[in-house]
Image (cartoon, rainbow, N blue to C red):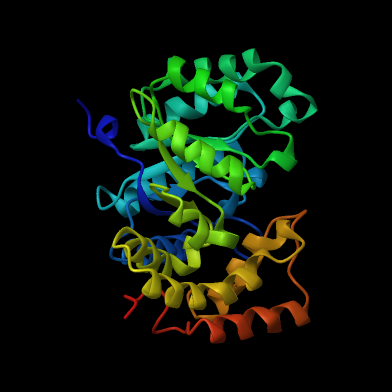
Length: 320
């Protein structure tokens, strides 16, 4: 059995950012530094690349391939690598999955094809075929991304359960369903399966409540900035220490306002700006159509980092 097939998707898994230079090329030096910052956090259980936080929508296949190879070169076997599979083409998804395995990934994070927004929930055979192409190309464990109900890209529960039964490579879901009732149902029903499936929350705007429902961990872009706080919160929840969890959540809350206030599509732009303020990135370039936040928002981000008690020394440091 390969190391990859033994990967267990649980605990705190940051989704890393991808720095660019002023010409909007990948800044490999800053990327190396960012990954080393993340892997220095005691308690993380993996790092996700080529996801939303890395602006995967704006990356070519060749760039995603370069990121996968570079990540393995930097991290080696220090921490598992989860590679995002983001594409509207099922043929391309298979190609990406094969590439990820060849470049040493430990698991795949599979996004729903955007084209399914027009009624894919009524045609479950479409996502079934998409996953067939992926599983034919790679035997890596899969984390299936469950999108918000409001996106029209989430999988109805009956469809989700059929996918889990048909494709045992799916070891977890990244749950962003956005509804507390449905989120709890996912946790209970997936844990009750004959072969239980893990639930990783990405409800970063209400992380304390989500984890308290019994999630097995979290996979979040906010971990690119606050992985240390996420680890501390997850450990407090696992230990049943509500007072400590609430105290840590009080530090996380300002970052929620910094990252997740409307419009939500700016969340990862804001995370880059936070890391510039914290002295962890030299610049915060993003690829269009994303654009740099305005001055008033930059001031808000800085104020929120201060309220969270984050600075150059405390960013990524153990939480005491």
